[in-house]
Length: 283
Image (cartoon, rainbow, N blue to C red):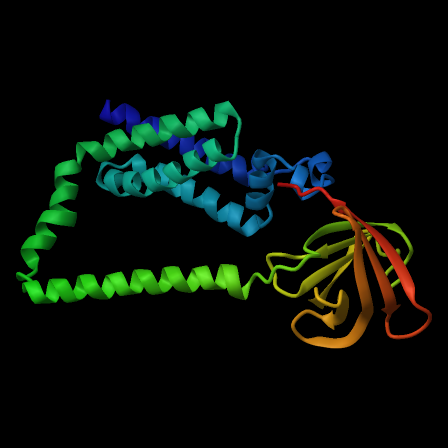
């Protein structure tokens, strides 16, 4: 059983390693690349992500081939099995969570199980190396030092948890009535350097003060500030850097899904109007 698991895992790792090098994996269909990201399935999103960098894909492939070769030698079997089990567990989780096809998921499951069998045969040695010998090598820690360490770790957990919560919910987020995706249904704005008129506006809830203008296949990030009391809206050229003013005017809601912007674009000319319709969220 031990030998069967070794060579089975080696064959699977060799197969998938060379599949990546020869272009049988991490390649994306043109029809998938033309889809909006919100419409892409988890499988193709994962495939595109891992195949985006040829260097990364090659490194993964080389790692799998090296592990396969190490499994073929008794002296390096345990080392390769420990590393390979971690790798295959991550791959298996990705396959399950992102909906990779059954064949690939089943192969990952069998390989992870085979490597697990090998590692389990050495459980006493691993337990002794990573636990028993570590406990024996260190002198007894006084109770007050243990309590101090626990208190320091607790403080660190609270600080990092509270800090990242503040970043996500205070620093990164500044909710406004305009937040969301909007399509231009009436009126036009042509920005210098853009080939097409403005067709989409994104007031980003998850990036405080960021508004994104989309002009067909081009887009620009801007800084915006809104005053809900006076219904005033101002937009500048550079997010968080401001620069020249792109828009200054007012907004009003005709209803929950219909927004009217009225004011001057680029600081000159007559007042313009844009009718915007809210686009349903992709999530």
